[in-house]
Image 1 (cartoon, rainbow, N blue to C red):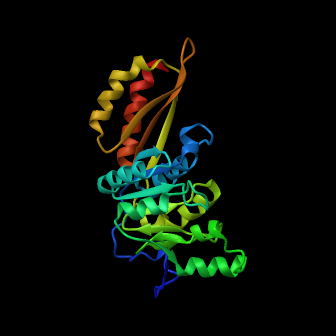
Image 2 (cartoon, rainbow, N blue to C red; image 1 turned 180 degrees about the horizontal axis):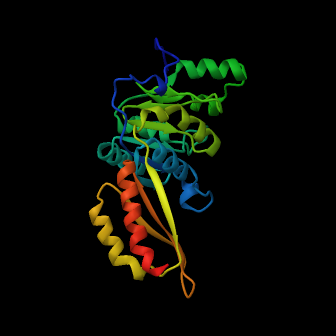
Image 3 (spheres, rainbow, N blue to C red; image 1 turned 60 degrees about the vertical axis):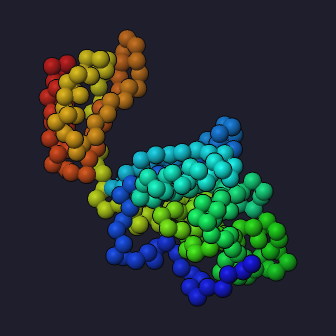
Amino acid sequence: MTLDVSDLTADSSAMNQSTAKHQSVAMLVIGNEVLSGRTREANGWLVAQKMFNKGCKLSEIAVVPDQHSAIITTLNRLRKQYDAVITSGGIGPTHDDITMESIAAAFSVELIEHRFIVEAMTAHFGKEGLNDGRRRMTRVPEGAKLIRCEKTIAPGAHIANVYILAGVPDIFSSQLEAILNDFGDTPFLRQEIAVELPESLFAAPLEAIQLQFNDVEIGSYPGRCGPSPSGKICLSSQYPERLQQALNSVKEMLAPYL
């Protein structure tokens, strides 16, 4: 079935400006190729970077196989738990691309052919070129808006608080750029201190500093262990003054060892 809608070019960037921006987000990566080790997952790392800069907390990344039940169950949990969910993968032309139909089922809506996508693909490939695989890529959950980008004719989709993006990294990146204005408001800032000490030496005082600054996230990340240890202490916050105060406290704590 082809849906005849009045606003064929609507996309997520046209979101009502009065709508509050998402402050937390989860990512749902869909694909057997990720779980089997065939493909190294890169889109989650990109989302983490972009959301950090936007000031939206990436709270969870879940990876599920190309199975209806796994996609539906995990998506329903994530979309209730967080402000928004971004999915990656499973919207191509082959039999294992079942993301759109699974998300339609999760929302209890029909999976429909979107008139705009049909028209765009017909114009690009010709009527004879609109084969079954490409026709499959015209389907979105009923009521969804399109997420269009420069990298592909076939768009992603946005329904409620779920953003459905492609799995191919360059297409995913382009689609992600199209929706970033829906997320965050105050960017996170980060400061790092390189250390050449075993973590056990400063574990207790670092914990004490963390307790003083509940609006600053403090983490210790070793790079090399053994007789010549090295690593970094990383601090991040949306509050510049508090971040600087916490940074100063960590520097004072490390001073006796330098």
